[in-house]
Image 1: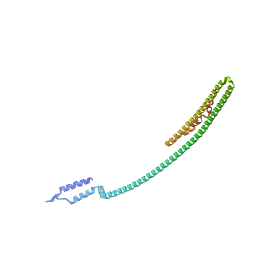
Image 2: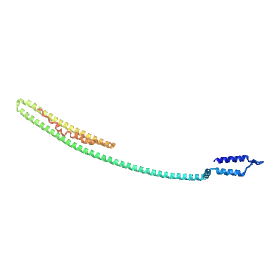
Image 3: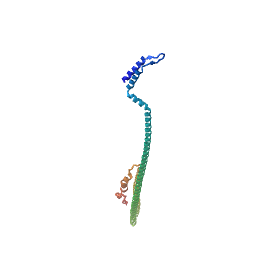
Image 4: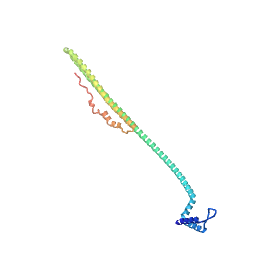
Length: 272
C-alpha cells in the first residue's frame, strides 16, 4: 500500500516538471516512466479492491436475490400465520363446543338431581301428611271414646244420685215429721247431681279441647317443617330439617302423652 502513495507522488512530480506545450495549457510527459509508474501502481493496489469492485458489480443481483428471498419468506410467513390462525380458530370453536356441551350436561344433571330431591320431598310430605292424618283420626277417636266414657260415667252417677234422692225422698215422705226436711234434701241431692253432671261434661270438653289443640300444634309444626324443607330445596341449601322434626319433635309431640293417659280428668265424688 505504501508503493501506491509513492507512485502517485512520482507521477505528480513528473507532471509538475514536464515541459509545457507552447500556446496551450498542456505539457509533454515521458511515456515510459509514466507507464512504469502506472504498472507499479496497478500492481501495488490490493486484490480486495478488485473483489470489492466485483461485489459492487454484483450488488444489484445480490439485492434482487435478497429482495426475492425476503418476499418469499414474507409470503411463507403470511401463509403459515394464516394456517395457524385458522387452526387456532378451529381449536377455539371445538373448545367452545365442548364447554357448551359440558355445561348443558351439567345443567341437565342438576335439573334431574333437583327434580329427584323435589319428588323425594313431596313423597316425604305426603307420608307425613298421611301419618298426621292417621294420628289425628286415632287421637280424635280416643278423645271421643274418652268423652263418651266420661259422659256415660256422669250420666250413671247422675242417675244413681237421682235414684238415691228419690229413694231418700220416699223414705222421708213416709215419716210425716221430716217430710219438709226430706224434700229439701232431695232437691239438694238432685241439684248436686245436676251440678256434678255439668262439671263432668265441662271437664270432658276441656280434655278433648286440649288434645285437639296439642294435635293442632303438631300439624302446624309438621307443615312448617315441610315448607322449610321445600324452601331450602328451592334455594339449594340441602339441609332437611323436616326429617329431623319428623323423627324427634313430631314423635315427642304426637306420642308424648301416650304414657300420660292416666292424667285424664276423672270423675270427682259427688257431693251429698
